[in-house]
Image 1 (spheres, one colour):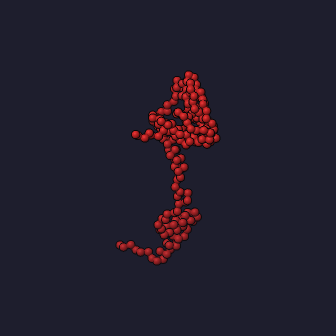
Image 2 (cartoon, helix red, strand yellow; image 1 turned 90 degrees about the horizontal axis):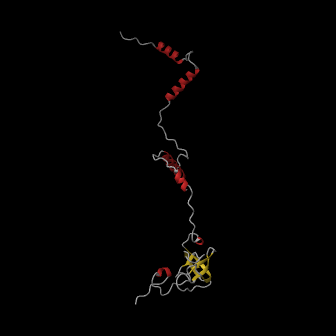
Image 3 (cartoon, one colour; image 1 turned 90 degrees about the vertical axis):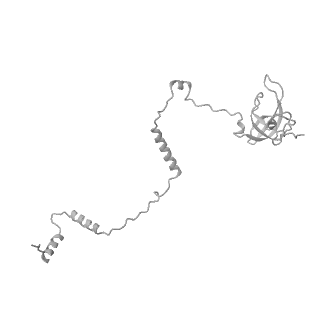
Length: 211
């Protein structure tokens, strides 16, 4: 037997009861149902990409990179498999925790430079220490930084006098106290040693012409 179809009045009555709010339902649930129905009826749209804020699009600076690398390296050192070696008692007694003394420079007026230019104030002769004897040719030089020093004139004979411009280098005279510098032969007003055959480069002598 085929199922009977409901009449139009029955369908209208059912719609009326379905559309009415239930007396047992709370107003919050009714509003939630309405919101859900509105949300379900909203048209489906494709998601759009939102613009990133300004601070998120910036590239990390070198300082930030350095900080990150230093942080990672410090964390990596914490997980080292090699244990930290401490000083033993004998090493501490020998003085391993004392800092090394700064090496004293032998030519302080040069201020870390290999050579320096100066003006001759006067020339003189200095007697060497015992057991040596003789006469050492020296000169008082005023450097470009204002310091006045005593320099040794190497080689036999020289042509400098007062107001001569010379070039000095570091290096003391072993048997003359207070003489910490050497004058460079063959530079500026100081001529080289004549008739020198050996070690000509140290005394500014030109190569002799071959016969």
